[in-house]
Length: 308
Picture 1 (cartoon, rainbow, N blue to C red):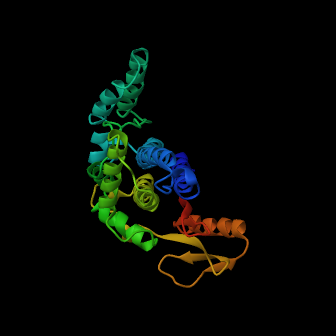
Picture 2 (picture 1 turned 90 degrees about the vertical axis):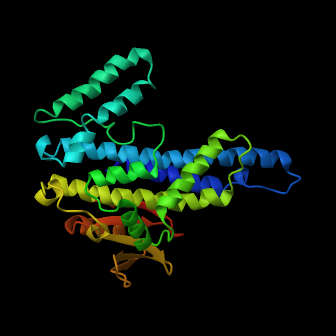
């Protein structure tokens, strides 16, 4: 179970409720000046928190993946070369950046802890520092996300995320641009006192953030599985991961019933009014068939997913 995934889903769905299910964030008539000023400030705060939730998911999910790699009983020297570099000497930059954010009393212990993980890669077993991806700068950007996925042999990362999003019926526009827009919106909301973030922009970002998160997760989870299986073509870099390597089942609420579908099938595999049992059975099939699982809520927003 991924804590990073569960935390992100909870936060992004709360963001959705905050912008659509309360009057506090909605602009009223011009005569409601005091309310509108409060709503403007709240929306700006939500723009910051929403983007931070996506950033935190990507960094935390990477940390989980690195932890699993350390337990994969695979010699460090057999890992893809880029992964070796990012978790050793490249990680020193992230450690140095993080030290600048910590209290002086904690710095020595913090540095020793992560230096110990880097040193452990000369032995077996070893632990990889969770700071390797995304912790070396204040904010993530689209280029860093691309670099992270390329470390895991994912070809043309943003294009693969777009295809996953399209197959899930989430977004049609390029998600790299959506991510850039969300980042720019976050910066303005945080640093421009007069900024007025539109409600619709935040509402739309919810879907875009889910699309980026699930696409990223599907791809890096596939890479992790190949690595844990000691797949030689993946380890030597000759095998590149793409959307074609992703397979999943999903459950949607249609015609007042819960329906389970396989990817690229328009016919329901199973139909039931008992959602809990349908989820259990679908997840069981996913585990035996090496598929991912996606659950939509009754209004069509992704409520959960899992990578088996």
